[in-house]
Length: 446
Image (cartoon, rainbow, N blue to C red):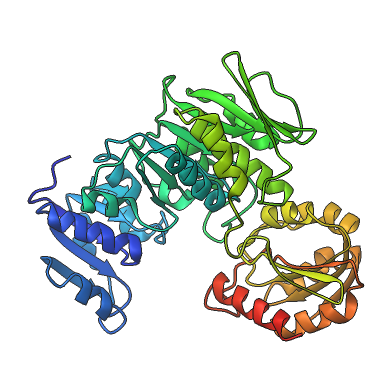
């Protein structure tokens, strides 16, 4: 891909956009960077890129920049139906995402992981598995560093492991991972997409350019994932925690069994540190990524066995008067909460936040079966009470601290308090990390 002297517009100056602007400038492109935030809000970004030849258009977007560009690189936070992007398309301008740009320059094999839930855990664990097997590994994408940071560093790597979001997949054209994994599908980001199917279609694009030489790791237990997997060109490799597979990786009777091309390897699951039934799926998917691309069984399982929970995903906080408190602030959609509820009985669930537009129906059965008390907070509380409140003993709290205090009054010894919101955090907090820290502080104050 020739970049020198090309007129390239970078839209959006969060971490990904900054990395793209820097990389493109260093490749002698004529870069214009635009963001609706103004100079005062982006002073640090301008200072960081001060040595680069970049034209800034801040606090506004100019239509001419879009329609006259040779190429537009869009940050994931910019919606696909942005009016100026549509005008650029009409003018014949090529629009790509950062992962598309990066993939055109990355020569190492690419392992790409997506899904509604579990992406970060699976991607991080897969990276650790490759490292444990001696591969020089870059872990990035939607997690940690943008892929363009790797290009900028020019350091040689054996393999690239990337978490990929639906937003990043919207503007791909030739992006082709050697191994692509789809962990699960459930309603999410319906505040961005016109409907559930549009979100699903975006996720499925991870397989779009694969061929029969590539591998697709898919969840056999997820009916939607398995349905759409049937039409893929790549070789299917399923994982399951519910059924035995002739070809694939599955969990049964305390053993993880890997079967591939007539070879069977068994791993005892009892000593695995990462708890939660949903994490068994993440572990199997990550192990499959490694084992299918040359990793040795012993080192692969050692990395999986010793891997511990990431922050804000089913993280144990403390036990008070016989009650265990868990923080799951990263559970910003219904599917994630559904899996979290499978891991406990006698639950007091703290949920709510900024509603994302999806259905709460998948939570009906697990709440009826496992949730003794439901405490609702945030903008979504009223809607959640209307749809879920009659299923169990339900309460409202005006703050997260009040919800924690109330949970301590309601929960009997032996029970579990789980903060798993099913919503984003932006109504009450800066982000899910601030929500997590506020919960942890409230629990420690009990």
